[in-house]
Image (spheres, rainbow, N blue to C red):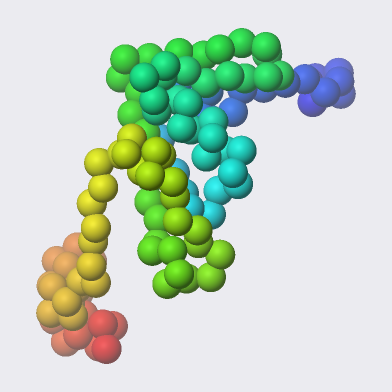
Length: 124
């Protein structure tokens, strides 16, 4: 609502990022509703545009706009669905496995400035 209490439309984070050339990270993309995935597909295809029905406006992304997404494998966790090949083809996919315990302990030790023995206990 505005200062008078009247409901008004305000652009969300994605539209602001499109206009300003910001980077966006969408976490757990394969949990998103189908309508969201369809809108993203249009944004990431050759048209590179997002329709904002509330404004009756098509927003073209700023040249520096970047979109990143994460997901857990479908089937490995409840509720995750497989994304369509069309949508997946718009991303560069990186598959990251589990971090080995000794590497995780090393990261904790050096990033959190803790003793190696504490890092090992945390990992265990």
